[in-house]
Image 1 (cartoon, rainbow, N blue to C red):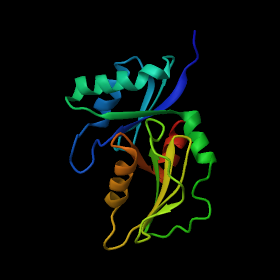
Image 2: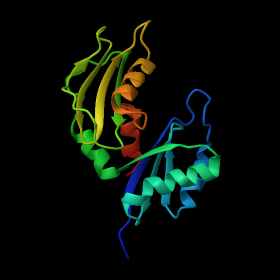
Image 3: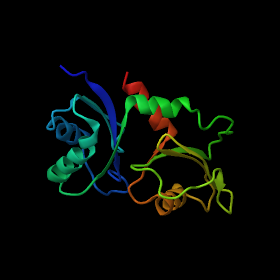
Image 4: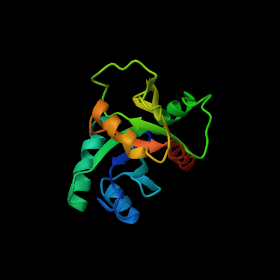
Length: 182
């Protein structure tokens, strides 16, 4: 019998701004219908931890197809093993960043290798957001909220730079995923 491997599926754009609403219980059942085991949803923003013996190469496509069948709309899926998430945390990408109530730390997961090379760090002209580094299939960004700057400004720039298949999570969400995976 093959050993179970732990994964997290990051779903793009569900339960955001009243769009693509999916109840977590329904989402869990959709994953279980694929034979995935020990399925847990983390927050309502589309983070699903599960275990499987299935090869990772076909999982994202199978999950996308099941979500379309279950909910009637397309949902982008980016998979990472829990070991890969631990590697991202071990990078300590935000070391030395002074965090204030206006600071937001983000990890953007790339479904593929970036098509363009970007020399990091990159800072917006207004200095409201920075891309610190790109490593382990992820982009690490810092946003400073101001009256004229919102998180959607950074998300728009990331979509434009890396494509619309990326998905972004707050650093606190990444910590919650790791804690829930234990």
